[in-house]
Image 1 (cartoon, rainbow, N blue to C red):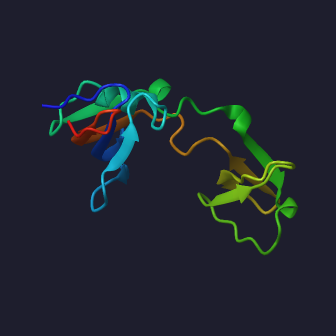
Image 2: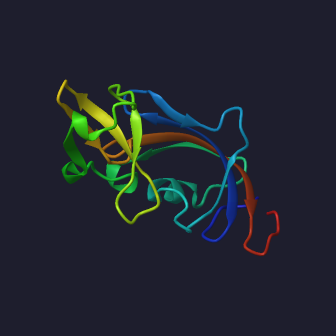
Amino acid sequence: MAQAKSGDTVQVHYTGTLSDGTIFDSSEGRSPLEFTVGSGQVIKGFDDGITGMNQGEKKTINIPVEDAYGPANEDMIFTLERSDIPADIPLELGMTLNMHEDGNPRPIPVIIRSLTDTHVTLDANHPLAGQDLTFAIELVGVKSPSGLIL
């Protein structure tokens, strides 16, 4: 039976939950997630959890903050004057906005964390930063770097 190792391309079905049991992502009803083990395409804890699994195996992995999206960085939370945001953009607590830095063509997603009549507090951390994560996973396919289905 094929065992996942660094360099293999794997297909995985998963359900990701937070410590309170809230599901934040799942492949249910979709194609399995495909990635190359050890390539950095997924968070370290997920990569490490797949390594050594056998095709068809199911397990639950617990990923601490450090091996997930890291701790929340307070320097990435900032407050703007509400008047600095165009009036035609509706603002709601928890909403994600895309900001653009001068000279950077890629938008930076920020989450509205606080809203007053005069100020808006935005958080540019990854939405899962500061969270321990749990994944129920099933390894459904393994292909070696040569393309052979193991």
